[in-house]
Length: 162
Ligand code: RB5
Image (cartoon, rainbow, N blue to C red; front, side, top):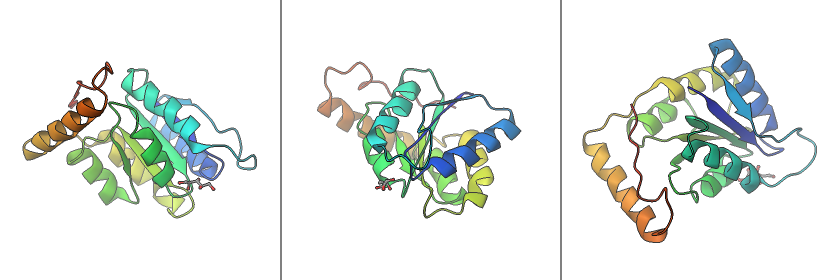
C-alpha cells in the first residue's frame, strides 16, 4: 500500500495531520504538495498530480485536502480511472470503499474535525470493496467514463481491487 497525498493551501493542515497518521501506521506516501498554508494555490493542480499517481499505479490510494473537499473531488474525478469521494467521517469513508470502490478520498480540512483523521484514513485504506450489486453500478460509471473518453487508455479499465 502506497498513498499519494495532496492539498491546496486550505487543506494543508489536513495533509500534514494525514502524514503523521500514515507515519504511525507505517504506510509509505508521496507528498505532492502544497508546501504551506499561506501561499494561495489552485487545487486542480494537486488533484491532477494525485489522481494521475493513482491511475498509473504509482500509488494505490490518494488523499486530497482542500477547504471543503468538493473542489478536489470535482477535479480528481475528471481523470479517467479516478473514483474520488468526499468523505466526512469513518462512516462515509467505509461506504466510499464498500459501495463505490473509491480510490481517492477528498476531505474538507476547514469543515472536518481533523481529530477524526486517524479513524477515517485507516478505514479508507483498509476497507474492501463489497462487490455484488455494487459492481454493476461501477460498471455503469465506467461505461459513462468510456463514452466521454473513448480514446483514453484508462477509460475502459475498471480495476475492482480487493
Ligand atoms: C480555497 O479557498 C477553497 O476554495 C478550496 O480549498 C476548496 O474548498 C474548493 O473546493
